[in-house]
Length: 176
Image (cartoon, rainbow, N blue to C red; front, side, top):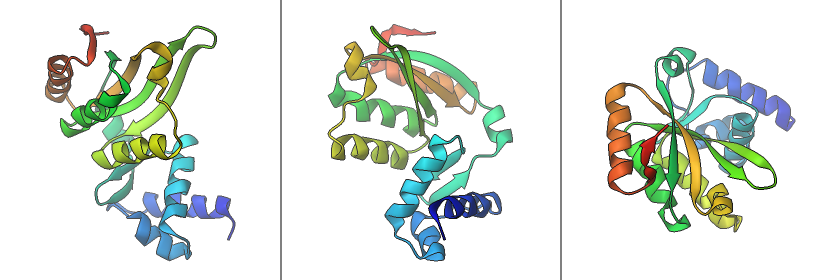
């Protein structure tokens, strides 16, 4: 089976279940390694598939769930050593980081999808930065960047914003 067919079947598996499927469980169905599935999921996400990683496995995000959330955009600022703190603060309090945007002096606006819904997602992202010896986009702008967040309700939104503000991670402590 080629990689494209495998990815189509992964989406079908996730569509047909309401329970999380671990990368290892999916890998065993296709006789590939867990890492191959993690890569497939990353590629599926990059192509627009709304796959959520939970501590118990992957789920396909249901449109009704995402439509009920509150989406906001915030401006953050921090050094690289506080990136994990920022990501964990949002997901630990019930929010999700949809994407990151920076304003580059040459390229203009650069936006990258993150789809960080849990500590697992944050850890995968942070590990990818580390193993690739890559810098986060905010390194291009002195730490200033925008995030689009999704929160299930106003209570979670207020809790996330208050925590980011208290930790000094919001730029001028304002939300836009």
